[in-house]
Amino acid sequence: MNQEKRIPETKRRISLSSLCGVSGLLLSIVCCVALVHVEFRIQEHNRLLSHPTTICDQMEEEVLRKVQQNFNRWTALTEEKLSEGKGKSLLPSVM
Image (cartoon, rainbow, N blue to C red):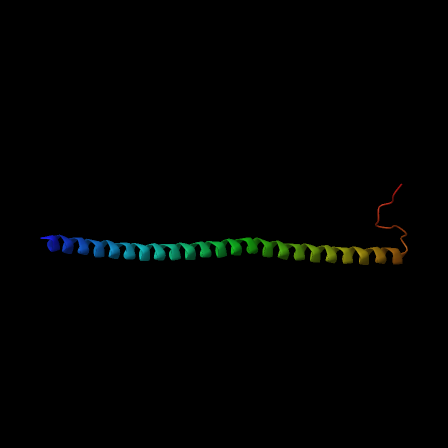
């Protein structure tokens, strides 16, 4: 009779041990999936942060290029006016 009680108890311990092992395995899998998900989100945020920086850099280069073109045109016009002898400078006079 005593041995009959031990067999179900032993089976119960094995079942609990298996259940704990499976639970631990599932928890490990969930943690790995969560870690991969977080890593993907970090990469996406980094991509989003670097994208506006690239656009701003391109816009800055374009603005500087246009300013340089306008300055070169203004310089050419100023030199042309001065060489024609009109005597008027395009620079505003300071009083």
